Amino acid sequence: MNKTFFWLMVLAVLLLPKNVRAYKFTTDFNNGFYFQSFPVGMQIFADSDSKGQLLAQLVSQAVSQWEDVIGRNIWDIPNSYVVGGHFGNNIRWASNFAAETGFDPGSTLAVTTRRTSGTYIGQVEVVLNAEFPGMTSNSGQVLYRTILHELGHVIMLDHSEVSQVVMASSLTSATSPRSDDVLGANAVVDEALHRQSIGFTSELASSEEKSSSPIACGSVDISGSGGEGGGPFNIILSLMLGIIATIFSNRKKQKHFI
Image (tube, rainbow, N blue to C red; front, top):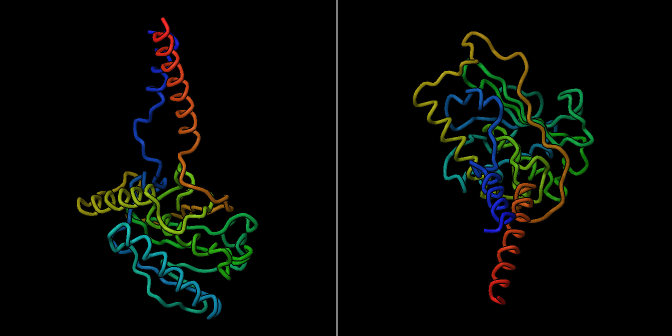
């Protein structure tokens, strides 16, 4: 066997991922924190009827998109809204986004925060950036796609390594969960249900204290449209396999002419 071909084969095997999943769980979920039960109840708050009506409509659509593909009832969010104030688990607008979240209002579309209480998630909040162009009017479905993404953060999915999926780190053109999103959602819910069933307690939990600062997941900027991809690894692997195929093809041709 040609030495170059041999070592390329070895390198390709070493580069193959031990776990091919691209979805990720949030740090707090990996640390053992989880929801005490499903569905996760949330309330929608707005500072005007027009914002509230649009938000309630889009949240309902996004929840249906997720639950239809997951096949489970994960969120309990009434198709209604409250004008003024906010409390408990909620989805709401922020007119002074930077002051409320500490994130850049010029590039961050929304932030999801989770506070722990003991081993459980005690409060979850989705804060939408009312200052970002097009958000309050849902121009180009930017608000809808942001809500779809943030609901994934609510159930403790982190950003995926796959491009053009709902849970990609930058907002994409995806208007419904893709295969990696569905796999991740089922995996995180399955693990949460398992923890609920056995009464699991995180080693980092304290039953008498609430976390003083929440875990935050921000949706940052907007990426271009395009098909579902596999990131830098798939590009490298494709190049490697292409080189291997070329070498193998050339060797066959050489044998044919001998």
